Amino acid sequence: MLQLQINQQYAQIGLNIQKPMLDLRTTKPQIELDIKEPRVQIHSPRPEIYIDQSQCFADAGKRSPLEFSWYYSDIARSDAAAGIDRIVSEGDMLAAIENGTTIADVAAMAVEENVDFNVTAIPKQPPKIDWNIQPVQIELERGSVDLKLHRGHIENNFQPGKINVYLAQKNFIEINWVGENLNTRA
Image (cartoon, rainbow, N blue to C red; front, side):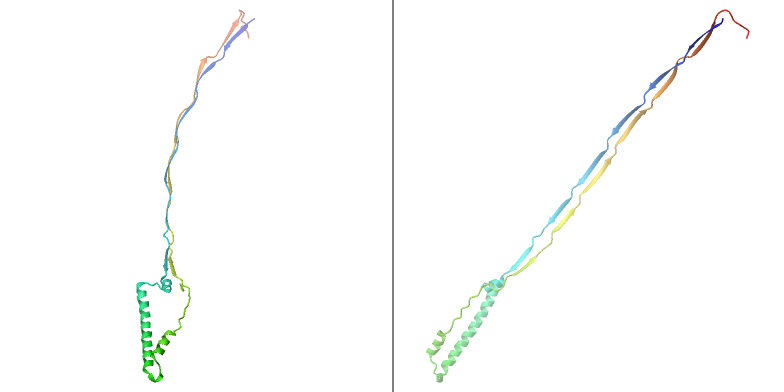
């Protein structure tokens, strides 16, 4: 009887694997700010007040030198005119002897004058008050922010993975027969 002996060997493959590699180099973004601060300037002129008390002082008998001279010159003129009038009337009375007026009568008339006293409050007129108000002046300088952006960037070094396949062992099949009898008829 014929026996067959079969020997076989499977093929084996080998793999050289190189893993992929990603090397990233990053530069971070930067922001540069140029800031100009706002400014406010305020100018507030003070109000001006004008008080005219000349009429109040005039009521109290206090006047400016020019008004003083005018006022008292008017009083002097009227007193002088009144004195001249009184002297003339006394002279006329004494000249009229037929009426029987004597010097004693003229002197008695001068003594009998009634003096009138009046009490009043001064000043009689309020002072004149004027004012000058100016508005507040505001000067504004606006602030600003200038932004400069320095962009970041990424440098990548990518090495793709590789797989090298090689045949580590060849496959084969070996068929042998064992025995001496070979039936050649078929």
